[in-house]
Length: 142
Image 1 (tube, rainbow, N blue to C red):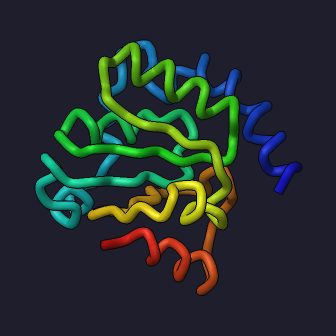
Image 2 (cartoon, rainbow, N blue to C red):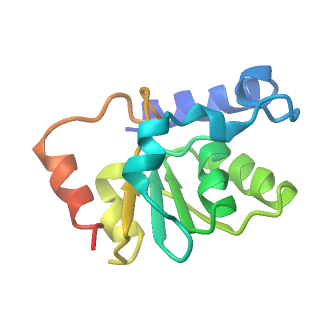
């Protein structure tokens, strides 16, 4: 776990400076979501959303912009630091918590959410699969 965390901490400054993440304003992060995702998610205003494996939080900010009460969780302290900065710069009300996904239930203090979202791609833990993680994430869902 520590090796993975160190890996993502080291990647963060490189990715923050990359045009890929759209921090220069040239990319609309809402476009990273497929149409079916917005359909599946439904209306977000007033709903509680937790976004696991958040990295820089660019998509997490989109949930907040669409009216959700939003929490982002990530293993990387450097990613969380940058995600908080990005949220402030975009005037988005997002709470960020540093934790690995295996400890998400405890790190979130037993809170439950209307939406538990993990996104696409490998994320800071690598591809998460298996009953243990899925069951624990299920504990976050209302």
